[in-house]
Amino acid sequence: PPPDGDNMAVNTSSSSASSAAIGPVADRHEASVIGNSAPSMTSPLPDMNSSYNRELLEDLMLHTNVVMARPDPALVAEAVDPTVLFATFVNCSNSMLSLEMTKDATKVAAGFSDNAVRIWRLDDHASGGLGVDDGREVIELKCSSKPIYAVSWSPDNNRYLLSASADAQVRLWDVAEKRALVTYRGHSGPVWDVSFSPVGHYFVSASADRTARLWATDYVQPLRVFCGHYSDVTACTFHPNCNYVVTGSDDKSSRLWDVQSGRCLRVFSGHTDTVSALAICPSGRYLATASEDHDIRIFDISSGAEVGLLEGHEGAVHTLEYSAAGDVLASGGADGSVRIWDVAGSFNCANSRAETHASIIPTHTFSTKHTPVSHVRWTDRNLLVAGGAFDAGR
Image (tube, rainbow, N blue to C red; front, side, top):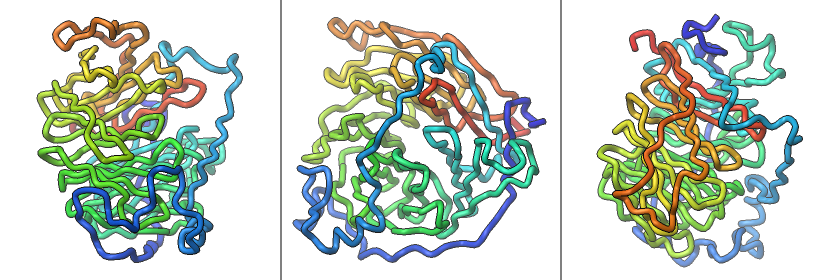
């Protein structure tokens, strides 16, 4: 059984051959829109009249015509009273730096300090079941010369993966082929976070150079550079309508950016330490921010007002995600707990002011013995999947 008493353990000691990336063009560090050659953001795809774009799209483009299959309502659980499947990673408490699961909870990718990304299957197709040392194949992707700080799965399939590393680069991987397709260079410091857009073709990266950058998978230069934070940009995510990007920073604030113009539209403040995680509800109305100050704050995006304070974690909060209906928020942190928050109907936005916001306590707390929680993920059927690295010294 897993040493933590959790549902699943994964052995991280496998290795495989490395792969090489395609070299991009020279670095760029402009502080606004990149040149006249960048594709226009007024259309959802780059210029298809360009033969260069057509050739790249044929090989690399992550198609935007995502068809979301609705699960049978009879099989959808109540998010406010969820079942939690926890994956415990062993032998890697000091080396695993990032973790993300696919939306269907069939695969999990992790970034490590030995410069590798490793991928496991979590479903019935995994050879030999789900126990430790079961002979399950581990896919190892290795190209970077520095540690991997973040990974992000494409939303429309489980084939493509982004990784962000300390060498200031982001890489796009073809998991099925076990090779790097593109290396994106532009940042001048370690890249702390990376996130695909909801439609897959675009992604945003956050860096120690105090900027976030917007990219397209078929273009090696950034389309937008978002400048305004006073310290490292530590977290980033897209608004559900893809017109906005939200970033969190070591300067204790979060910012809302307009994708079209690159301008900062809102500044969300209130935390007393680094903003470590972000989540936007499916309706696009509320932003949840988590911090190393142990708190989670909810903001009304349209007004910028803080409308909720979620207190209960006893350590830094590492991860956040809303359920599909947006009525429940899940969080995980350094205190080794997964907490469930019922946020439905909690906020009166017509009268919301920062000094009169709602204070909410968790409805459920699922605790591990020795495993800080690195990632939480809701499936379409409201199964909550979480994971972290076992730490015997905790």
